[in-house]
Image 1 (cartoon, rainbow, N blue to C red):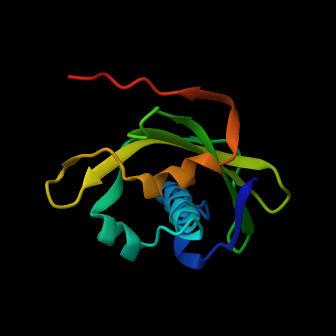
Image 2 (spheres, rainbow, N blue to C red):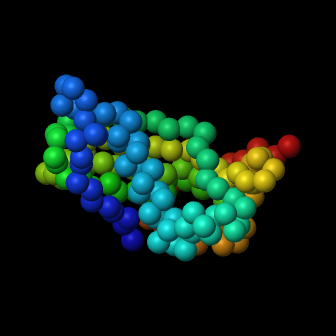
Image 3 (cartoon, rainbow, N blue to C red):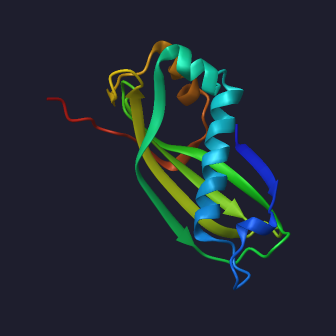
Length: 148
């Protein structure tokens, strides 16, 4: 199942050159991840109950086409990789302009943090559903985690 969210861009997303700010692209990608988590029963309140939260190690953005002020955009999110224990994950976000043309691609690499110990954590079983039902990229692969 594809996970797509359409947004109406807003004035504050743009810079004086009438280009969408580079950080606005990343904000929309983050919003899509949060909505994906919520739709799978993991609201911010549920994360707090589980004492765990997602963190990013790396965020890489590639820009291809302009997005203009007032334009609607669609963000598609797919799982690019996950480790066996679901400790690490990679999501790929594609942002399309109003004509359906790929405007940007954002890849994030992340993990889970124990909110009390402030250390990397192995997620509880409740998290598994996030990845089981996620649409996978064509180049999906298992992430190998070094132990020790």
